[in-house]
Image 1 (cartoon, one colour):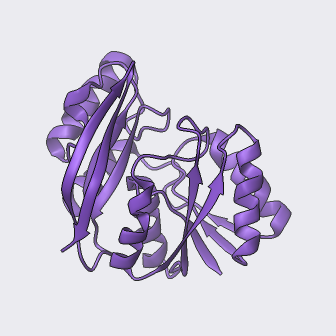
Image 2 (cartoon, rainbow, N blue to C red; image 1 turned 30 degrees about the vertical axis):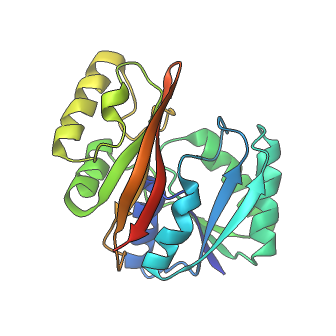
Length: 219
């Protein structure tokens, strides 16, 4: 089974597309559903909508539940890969050696081929591709300079300019590999229908802000 580790965000969606273009089309989208809001490995905002994305793409989807505790959550990922007979795993790893090294270790142990099409990609190159071909929005902020005004906003050329300025001033990773922000994809080249948000809200807790999609539909 060719499985893609899928969060609904920009990296996992773009990696899925790039892998398909190279001839490796995923047969299953696997989403880790973490109880812990601050999981070291897996992103949480709006993952409940991943089945809707999978429906639009036309790929089977499954959740694997985890408490999201550091290191222990890796055992849950391993269990999910075994239960779904994974032979190839596609991930959206960009620059985080913490995540990539741990996934590599699991794949080596299970004799799974790990494919990470975005590894080492130039941040501006990735964001430009998103701005031109995807409808991806920012759904969580947790970095200096990233305030409420970023939440729910599309990653377009204007947003790239804002992120470049934050990189210059504060050194943030523009691909959000340091946990600066998270994203959600509403439309992409592989989507047959786009997701339209019907109702949403913003929650702000200390330095964290989250754009929560309460209701959406495929159109």
